[in-house]
Length: 180
Image (cartoon, rainbow, N blue to C red):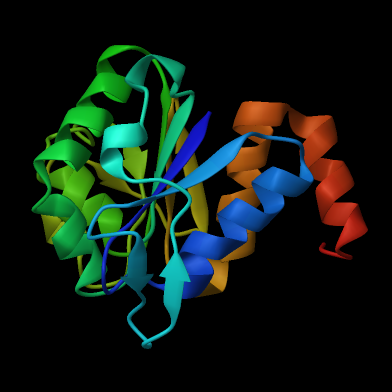
């Protein structure tokens, strides 16, 4: 199961592009409303989450995805549930995806990027303590997948697809949407 965590103030494209492409690739994906069943994006678009935190089964988590957006990334970082799920994934060799502000605000604050290559929204690199910051839309380092910003959401989502469903499935999705 892939859990995409949504908190009020999330960036729509950074959250829904991974949901869309992962589902096209055949992955089982659930959005999780961290701040309630209806979550409002940074641009005031209300989204109804599939489930709430109490419905998440940690043992079923193959991947957790953290979209950026402000104050969405801050709201994610303030959630004890988010920290517990992300830490569970890190400790159990599961994938963790984060884009835009989330790599710095959430993963950086949890010290999960030490000695990893990663990317985040330009100007937020200071939060990625001891990470090697790369200059690309998406970066994969082991089980940590990071994305720069909304402009790289397709690359980020396809990297998530590759991680969970394999390169052939990701290529099929990319071809089907005429990407690349």
